[in-house]
Length: 133
Ligand SMILES: [Fe+2]
Image 1 (cartoon, protein in one colour):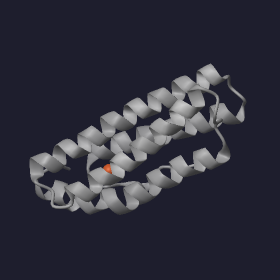
Image 2 (spheres, helix red, strand yellow):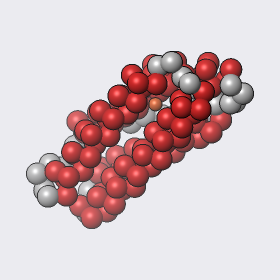
Image 3 (cartoon, helix red, strand yellow):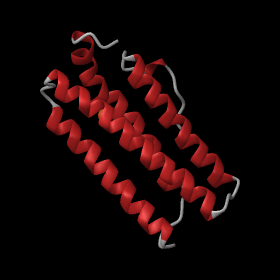
C-alpha cells in the first residue's frame, strides 16, 4: 500500500509521527482485508482509523488557527471532503452496502500520500517559522 519514507516528512516531528501512524493503520486494514478477516474485525479497524484521522486533522487545524496559517480554509476543505467520504463509506460498510476492496484501499493510500506531499507540505514552512519542528 503506502510506505513511509522521508519523501513524506513534513519536517515537524509530531505531525510526522501521526502520519506514520495513519500509514500503519491503512496497511493494517489492507492486510486484514487480504487475509479475509471478518466484517466485525474490519469494521473496528475502520472505526479506529476514522477516529485517528479526526485526532490528526484537529491537530493540524489547531496549529492553523494558532499560527494564522493563510491557506487554512482550503486545507480544512480537503480534510472535510475526505472525512465525509470515509464516513459515508463506513456507514455503507456497516449496513452491508459496500465491502472493502482494493479500490477503497487505493483511494485511502493515494489520498494520504498526495495530501501529505502536496497540501501538508505547504504548511510546514509556516509551522517551522512558528517554532514547530
Ligand atoms: Fe492535512
